[in-house]
Amino acid sequence: MSLLTSAARTVLSRVPSPVPRRQRRLTGQAARVDTIPYAMPVSSEDSPVLMAAFPISLSAARAVLPGTELHPVSLGFGRGVLVATVVNYRSTDIGQYIEYSLAIAVTHGPRPAPPLLPLALMRTLQLGQYVVDLPVSTEVSVKGGKGIWGMPKHQASLDFVVTDTTVSAQYDTLDGQFGALVEIERPAPVGLPLKLAAANYCAFRGQLMRSTIYFEATGDVAVGPGARARIVLGDAPGVQPLRALQIGSNPLFTAWLPTAHGVLDDHYEAWFLTSDTLGSVDASVASGRFGEPLESVVGLGRGETWPPAPDRSRPEVQGRVAAGVAT
Image (tube, rainbow, N blue to C red; front, top):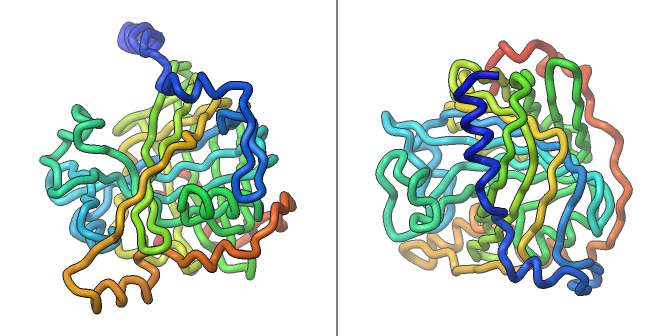
């Protein structure tokens, strides 16, 4: 182990838990929201996580974001950040499921932040990610995630494949359209203790909704030239906004967390999404940029049955991690 890695482990091990005291105080309480029972806090255990971040066009990212108060994080030189996070939830209040997040790194406020500054002023600039597409394995995950927290969840065929050298995840729509494949080369085993708080911004019912999740795990991370990953996009409706982002072939970082503990905060916030005129608001609603309507969750049940696995035999998903990006 290098001295740098050893120092990083020492520093990170001293970072306090990101879970707020209110969530810890809720331990042992119970809730039932929209017919779904929860043992508080809303948590998950033993959940492997795959992450990869890629550079994207900053101007193209701006065109994807809804309303006027979200701004893509700038790396400088006209580049933003796409973050792919796939979690294999093995133990939750609503059973087992996979969650496949494709998101743009953003800040929230009246104006964009200078390049890289959000990394130093995360809370001040309200750093987070705007979730563009969020397929999940089960109906109950859609019901809770979208109906309560406003996440753009939809049920899909998902997998999570771990080998000695790679971790990958694919999603197909329920009618068989190819959605996306994300694959990373497993980083060198450094065992960094990671304690993360992540804000998710989502569009639902014409509102911008922000929720927060906290993760604690020991994982392996690769940055810059040491990171190897690829993302392949298909023809599914949910990934179409991503196809214009000019995704770079060299990942910014990759992470493999073999097991993680997560807490989803039951507190969330929402703001009206706005535009210059009511006509442009109506156009955004009609196009889906302002999220789905309330009717999209009415009638959903609490099913935990997974659809069949996605089709890994597709020619477009064949290849190696070094293949980079295919859109």
